[in-house]
Image 1 (spheres, helix red, strand yellow):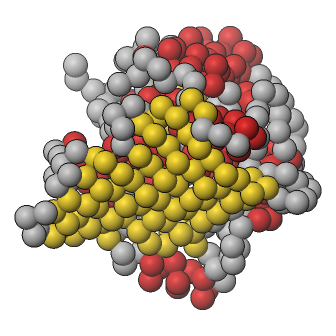
Image 2 (cartoon, rainbow, N blue to C red; image 1 turned 135 degrees about the horizontal axis):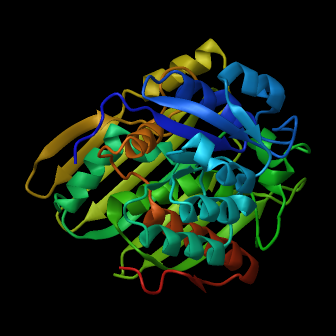
Length: 389
């Protein structure tokens, strides 16, 4: 089918807190192939208690700034679609509402870009997975922006081509200077349990990036998880996690998570993959969520970006690939690869599925088992992935 190159994606955003105001809205507004037609939030002043409340403006100001119509619920939005003629919806609401809001968008036939994690409840995540795979012509993407970086694509293609043979073990570390978020009194949605959550903290807030990356690159399916977690004495949120995942094919993953460390404007990324024919490294420094970093910190992060994907094989070959990049956090410009893929789907064009329903479901199920294991003190079976390859 031919694609009208002049077509602009007609997009609504549900959830207009700090991340939408600081990133999604300006990124979309900077594009010439998309238009923001509606904004949805129950609150007149959204983002209070979120991760970046300092960036937040009232809804009336936002709608005026972006020329968008205002709605209070996703149901009101979708009921007005004859007028709006939406192509897709970007969902940036709290984790507990992902299932109801995302499910409504999918059932309405719209393309969906949703913030990570897919959910904080296994049953809800499984429901979204079923809705997604039943609609192969609709995009259902998760905003794990690291999964569209050139380094991930190169790693994914190398593993798929079995350049390092059959995967046997993966070792990874992710450290972030986010103590202010996981121990802050004003950030309960990030450090307190809600609804059916077994726990809340670094795992839902940050480890969901690591697991989405690992599962996309490797194609592995988690079977059981053992976790030792150290919580914040102030909020009870997990700050330090030591995790061992056993996969359905016998491959193992050990993952270390750190939720508080010196804030120099970067996060620490380390992913090592070991196979029967070689090994792969994707390690370095990556940008931080803290939008107020000093110049020295920015310089250190830039120096860290000189690290690259590397592959060593048993026959002596050494390949060097793209630079190490993780989350896309640029507030200016046209946004991350996840947003670009979403817009292209809305325009009827081909796109790379960097983080979709399968990667999202595996990540949710792994993190749920992590929290259960941390409580029980023993390995826990992963729920929700039994029938996956």
